[in-house]
Image (cartoon, rainbow, N blue to C red; front, top):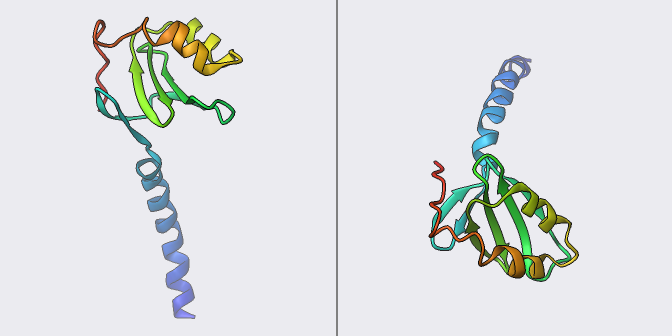
Length: 117
């Protein structure tokens, strides 16, 4: 009986602790080539299981900054317009679109990459 009373009092505390810690546990970070680690929280990410080359596209529309996983390696691109990202996500070949429209056109060495914590 006494154990049940203690357990009942601890349940709300445990629930709050789990909720508060959930964000930290779920915060995904990726290692981006030529940049280092970036947390994906500010990005909207889409996964493409049918594409053999482009596995995932993550976009921060406020910064116009793209992270893309190509065959498991993350790259970054700066000043990418939302229309380009939208067309890329809708394209029938994510890899071809990447090579033709993104790869050489939005290099972050020209425009500086945004700072993230």
